[in-house]
Image (cartoon, rainbow, N blue to C red; front, side, top):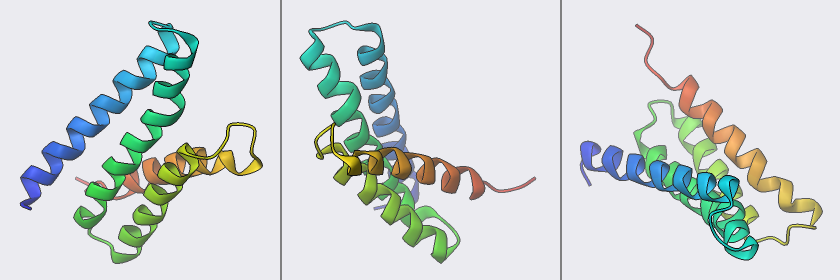
Length: 107
């Protein structure tokens, strides 16, 4: 897959994730659907976005860490909300965002 296509897909997934989060915040559907979109689908989409972004990172260590962050988001999305391990999805999200920001080219 070409780099530009990867970036486009990653951007689309990120926007879809933000839409899911906004739907959950504004309670546009039933509570069950809102929870599904904002607490599960959001993290799966963000994790998929991180998976696509990982090979684009210039630092190999960052790439592997991004794969770990993606896995944490996706795995955490499927854990029960009352599980102590459900915090895994938030840790994955935070790690992925930090890795994305730290990989930006400095001008």
